[in-house]
Length: 84
Image (cartoon, rainbow, N blue to C red; front, side, top):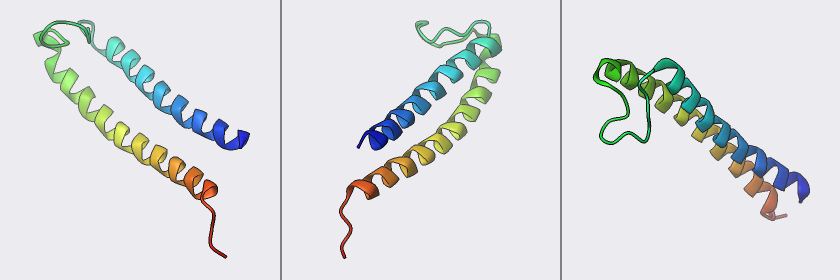
């Protein structure tokens, strides 16, 4: 059971790391990026690049979701009794 708990923790860590990495990328690529800014998170001169990065992030998020889902399904299959 500890191995399964470790695998689930790893899946959570991967998602958390994904989000942290993307926040770092946004800050590095967009000097005006502020996710807490009222209105829009970047100044007008950074809007095009912001949307390009959002597209990249969405594509990577879909891949991350698929990997996480597969990982969870594997854990579930190991926890679910199989018929004889």
